Length: 413
Image (cartoon, rainbow, N blue to C red):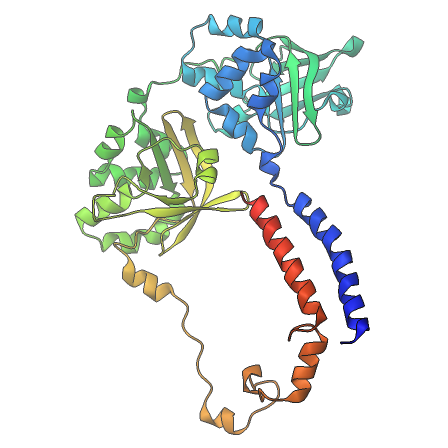
């Protein structure tokens, strides 16, 4: 055996392994970079604030975000807001006002352009805040102080920066402020589950056509009956339904109900739960042998719903008020129980086979590689020299492949 190929293989392996180890580290999921519950657990003075982040499901949403700032308040400040006896839904709105969807470390607070800025909060992101009421005013005050106030609080900066609790630039920043920010919009009473009007909510958020259909078909009762125990609704937008209506009109009355119930899941599923619980999900239409299920699958930061017939993407949140959450999707979910023919029709047609005429007059560009002689010694020699046919580099490729497989298995645990 020649020594040169072995030395080359060893050198290639030595150079490849450090690179692959660095690649493994770089592929570590960003979503696992922080955990607000664990961060605050190190500071007992924030135990009440930490508890209610979990009780309102805000903690999972904070952990999902790649860039976030949490304005924490200590137990004494939390007692002041708890004395108002707000419902859990209203308290969630108030606390979500203290989660900024941008990174503000201590240094950035004192380097704000023009000394003041408006920044969006998670309250604004939920769609529950009207106008600019979900924005926070941050102002660099004299004497090194920084003030915070809700935009709908008449410009009042009722809280000030106290200290930095933890900072992971530019992933998460946890800052202590002096007290809970007041906001008329956030503190407005939220309806109890029995008071929630699903069709009214849908109609105001670009899903009026879907709301009209569930009312007219009789499917609304099933949605309402499941509301108190937890309900997730995937609402096809008006534009998506408009394109689908010719198919909808061809369904029987019972099939229309099944189709609409297929867009509901009898459990409250925040986005973080959907992302962490990929797989088959039953729906309100599921009934024994009639599966009527679909698959939830992450696609980067997007969440997709796959039905074997069509794949829809979640494009936004209409409302997130435990026990109800409603998402907008860009396509109508079509169950395979109703649209098997449509699934077959949508499948890509097989590539046409070459004609006899082409076989009689082959060219180098048209002739498939598989038609080349299998016993060509020149080809075999080329394979061996490139490490494909069992040469020294084939061992390198096997090791590299093994390291990559191990890397990917760690990343996706």
